[in-house]
Amino acid sequence: MLPLRNPRLDNPMGRLPTSFVNARDADEVRQLAEKHGIPFNEAVRQILALYFRQPFPLSSKRMGDSKTDRLPEMVAPRHIVEGIELLATTLGVTRGEVMRQIIRGSLRKRRGHD
Image (cartoon, rainbow, N blue to C red):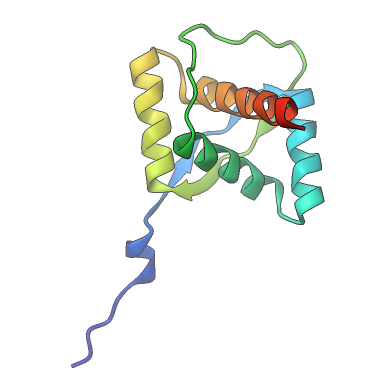
């Protein structure tokens, strides 16, 4: 009998929580997604993946923003989901807060390079 392999097991997925991000940050991610011809959720996944390849310090303090957009719950590779969970536990903040800080920090770093 031929061995059957499930490709989903090679790249297991998990779920990222729904969370709120600054409206300006969300707009910037939308613009990046549009510029590169990818969906918004994929742009968010790529930003998170880039963080884990090139991490920067995050804070245990919550970011306070009044104008917010909601990120939908999305599927992401398991290592990203587990990394977000580990950071949240280590910093004592929510997973959504970790995602907010990664997105904000990544966009700021990008602006610094433009």
